[in-house]
Image (tube, rainbow, N blue to C red):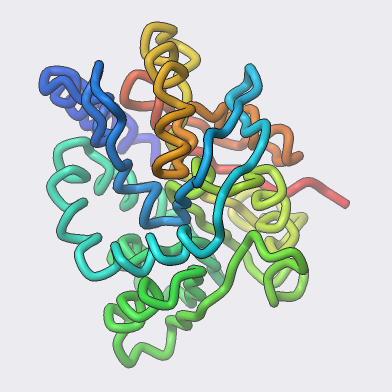
Length: 281
C-alpha cells in the first residue's frame, strides 16, 4: 500500500492544480466567485436538498437541519440515470477513480457499502469480495443491481443509515464498512458514522480487525483561503443542494468515537481518505 502513496499524491496534486486552473473549487463542480452549483458527488451518494437556510458551527458541523425528506429522495432518483456519465471525466482528472481503487482494495471479509449510489466502487473491490451495497434511493439501487448482474457475491438493497431505528443489520455483522462522499450530506454525520461503527466488527489487530474505509470531502485544515471560500458559500449551497461542503471531516470522525488508523489528504486538504476502526465497547 505504501508504494501507491506517491502515485496517489501525484494524482491528487494534478487534480487539484487542474481544478484550480479551471477556476473550480478543487473539482467540486462549483466555480469560485459564482453562485454555488450542484456538487455531483453529494447529490447522488447520500446527498440531500434543503428547503431553507442551514446554519453551521465553527467546526463545519451542521448546527440546524432544514431538509425536506421528499425533495432529498426525489433528487437521488432524478440523478440516477445520468449520474455515472456526469461524474466520469470529473473523477478521472481529479484522481478520484484512483483513490477509489486504492481504498477499496483494502476491503476484507464481509463488506458493507453505505450510500453506494450507482455502485461506482463496484469495479474496485478485490475479486471474491462478499459485498452488501445499500442506498436509500430505489432508483440508485436499480442501477447498482444492473451493475451487479447475477453475481451471488453482491447483495444490493434499499437501506438508510440515517433511519431512526438504525440499519437492519446485527451489530458486528461486517468486517469492512465503506462510505464514499456521504458525510457531507447526512443530516447527522456523527450519528451515521456511529451506526456504521455499530455494524462493523470490533477487536482484532492488523488486517484481522474491523475497518471503516472513508473517502470524503470537506473543509481544508491546511489552506485557510479555500476554507474561507467554502464557508462563504456554505449556507446558500446547503439551502439549495443540501451538500455541507465545509464540514470538518476529521472532527466528525473523532466525535463519532472512531480511531483513525490511516489518513491522507488531497486537493488542498479538502479530500480525505481515512481508514478507521470502531471503538471498543
